[in-house]
Length: 231
Image 1 (cartoon, rainbow, N blue to C red):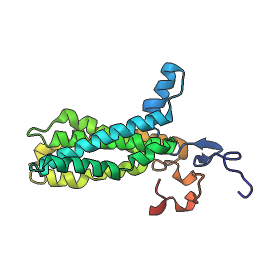
Image 2 (cartoon, rainbow, N blue to C red; image 1 turned 180 degrees about the horizontal axis):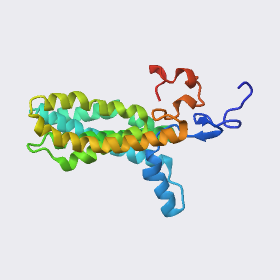
Image 3 (tube, helix red, strand yellow; image 1 turned 60 degrees about the horizontal axis):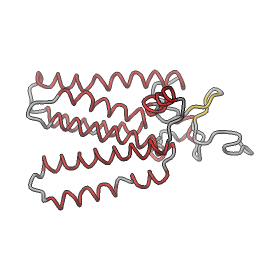
Image 4 (cartoon, rainbow, N blue to C red; image 1 turned 90 degrees about the horizontal axis):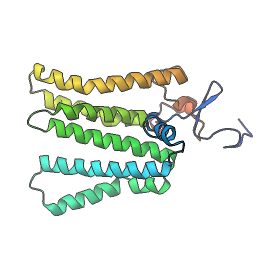
């Protein structure tokens, strides 16, 4: 409304629904990090520290993922190309830019990207073995699912699995594909059910993370499903 002052009359970038404020970002960082830390120590965990630490974890797994892919696909690649590739990847990741701000917005990205990179690393480590490593499939899928609970749009990292799995399983007997697919699906189903229940309890819809009620520079109530305003 006209005349309302940001951060005095309303909380900017929060979601406001039925007289209550909500954080429209995913709940996973709070559940896994901030709440346990406060319960154990009675203090508040530093957002800047979490952002810095998890972007570090993200870069470690991102570089490990690149090295694994090069080693698998282009095994004759010289060492210098490995070094150049990791440097270019790190520069393009925008991690340094995010760490320089290290606020709440950047923190959920840091945790989500770390989960995504670690998840993909574990899954490829499992699938690229001579014998499929089921012990790594479950945590890999769980991490990718948890990334969606950090930032909803990180579901796109999981969607990359679809073409990969089609390519991998199309030449294998159906019986051989059932077990890895089940191990892969269980953590996704569990996390999806919990996130949908959480959304339903807050906003009355299993697919609404709060973006429709976000108090920001854009009219999210009318534009929340446009590509330019995806959360």
